[in-house]
Image (cartoon, rainbow, N blue to C red; front, side):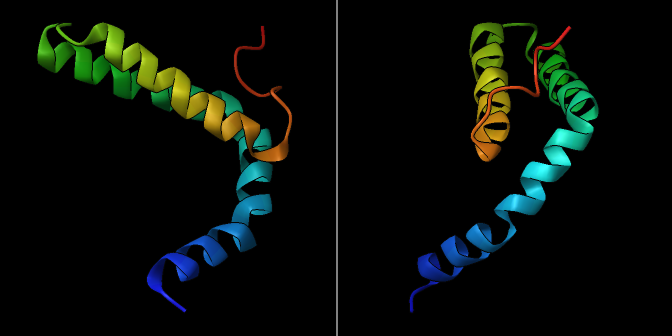
Length: 76
């Protein structure tokens, strides 16, 4: 068993726990992702704002899709 198999196995074992945490704390996670993006924008003078925004959306989409539903982020 290689290192990637171990990493994949560990992720698969904890995927449900992570999905539950995302469901319970989506608002705080989204706030953290937004703050991180704002920090990068501030440090780079907004030079990469479009890429930062794209990255933020990818992070939220990946976390939101862990449970097979797109229902955690972007909710009013």
